[in-house]
Image (cartoon, rainbow, N blue to C red; front, side):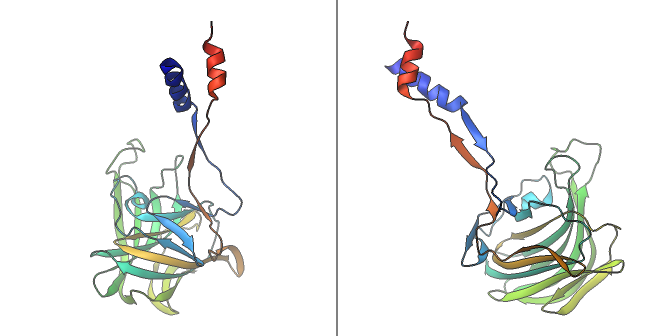
Length: 249
């Protein structure tokens, strides 16, 4: 009987299959952090983030869009900074995310808001990519973050703000509650790639996201339903009777 039980356990182990069960309502991939969709918000409940030391998305609590978008000109985001865990706090509104190989998302631009005890007080445009392109993609600590421009801002905790990323001619601008905070030349010609929302040391709640190509809405999510894809591990069990039959002489 012990032998039968051992065979059963071994079979269950080797028949464990990681299943990617992506439904049509999934729009986001949870990269890191603890996310929950509730009351028409996507909540990040962890606050603190783990430094994995690969690309920057993994060093933050990040939601990544499942699809890439082409030639968008505005990204409209409504969100709230719920609770500061410790200082400094970071909020990144990330765009033009591309991957040279599989899911190694090194290449990205972002408007980064940084703050402390009272709220966010600095906005900057940053660019991140692999530092040494000749090294393998799974090399740790092979990334850089370059600040391209910065300006002062004022964003308080526990209040919903509207963030608008807008491409204007050859520049990209950040508006907060319809006030232009920062505008700077955009180094690339194309506006293609995925988008992401990331945070560190602050819990956030995302209310709504909308992407436009000129005046046409090409993506939107108001989080009225759970649209976050999470990988699920399923185990296939083998009946004991079948195992007994297989090992009988």
